[in-house]
Amino acid sequence: MLAPERRGPPAVDKTSYLLSTYDIPVPRYTSYPTAPHFTPHFGPGDFAREIAAIPADEASLYVHLPFCQSLCWYCGCSMKVARDIDAMAAYGDAVCHEIAMVSGLLGRRQKVSTVHFGGGTPTWGPRKSRAGIMRAIRESFDLNADAEIALEADPRTITDELASELADLGINRVSLGVQDFDADVQKAINRVQPFHMVERAVTALRRVGIDRINLDLMCGLPLQTTETIEKTVDLALQLAPQRIALFGYAHVPWMKKHQRLLERHPLPSAAERYGLFAAAQARIQARGFIQIGIDHFAAPTDDLTKASVQNALNRNFQGYTTDSSQVLLGFGASAISALSTAYAQNDADIETYKKRISNGALATSRGRLLTVEDLRRRALIMDLMCRYAVVVPPDIAEGAAAALEPLLRDGLCHWENGSVLRMTADGRPWVRVVAACFDAYYQPSAARHARAV
Ligand SMILES: C[S@@+](CC[C@H](N)C(=O)[O-])C[C@H]1O[C@@H](n2cnc3c(N)ncnc32)[C@H](O)[C@@H]1O
Ligand code: SF4
Image (cartoon, rainbow, N blue to C red; front, side, top):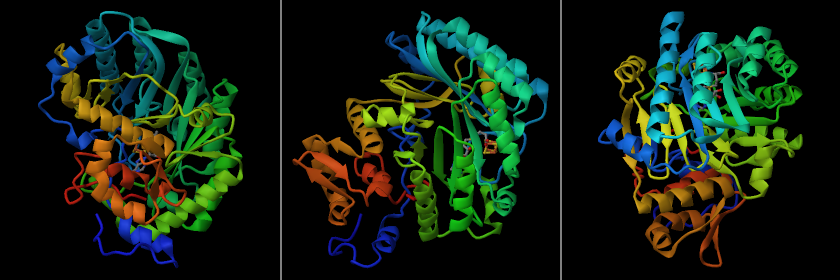
């Protein structure tokens, strides 16, 4: 990673040194192996075989609803702007069929502890799709009485009527996409939603009893300054959320061409991004929120904080979670299922997805069977991402020694008792760089990921 003769960070301006050395493209490690290493050789037959072998323990479900009312220029999600109600309803029907198909392959009503509706915008599109999907889930699965049923929502779509609908469906946690409250930043990212609009959405949700509210903020956007992000954080805190996600903007225009539209204004430099995150982080923590992993914050009484304190935090495609299921079944275009034996991803093209499901086939287009070695490294990397410390088996430590050496020397992590690798307080923002040392598939020269901070 570094030339061996480097002598470590100079005493002054350690942050600049770390930024110039370690702000490299690294995965976010929401899975291991990461999605670019899924292969098209893993198809529907493979997934069907793996589904049949899933143990009867509790599973989690993810449902992808890809439609949005308009395009946010920063968006890195798998989404499509859509207004055709019939087309969106047909997609909802396909998801219902897929749920029934997968349940048939399981051959039982699998217990389910968590359902997550992600997008795109699950609150955009016909009401009957959400109702139909929820019905299909309840028919096919054995949903725990206290199951968390979470949904990602765009505040611009939330009316009193929609809030009531969500409560009737049993939704009990909502993440609202806020990103930034500054009017100029909002214009620069094509996501205009003044504070009062988000406040109204939060009030509508609380009025119907949905009081587990998460807010998504982002740093690294054009025109953001320390001042604007602090103001955004203050306004977000005024809404008294249980959790705040502070995502670093992932600029990947080679994958998401529309992100070029964001380049009309200069993007913050690495040092500026770091400063923006640090400013927002300090403001959120000053209000008593506890940082969870790299980009989440939760109230001290929140389940995520408790899970973190009890070393029970987990990480999946939605980020940090209290969910401890070993099986995540993904439904909808682009959705990924994560099993203890494999990953399987559905075709991301909505029409192809619908066609395959309507032909009675699974829509798996990529995936990967996990080897014993993958499982060892997956557990290690997830532990590191969630707990900032991990027991490293001697053979893996030996293989990672050269890559780890500069990181150890620069004080980002250190060994305890010879086998526990622990991130230092200064090193925590760089945990993905340390995790990459244990990633057998990571090739720095070929890596096309967002930057480390
Ligand atoms: C599916 S969206 C949330 C629901 C809804 N579509 C919305 O935007 O309000 C999930 C979240 O991903 C985050 N996100 C989207 N694109 C991103 C990117 N390029 N980098 C980092 N975070 C991103 C945003 O914070 C967004 O709120
Ligand atoms: S951020 Fe949300 S609303 Fe905006 S385009 Fe992406 S998925 Fe759609």
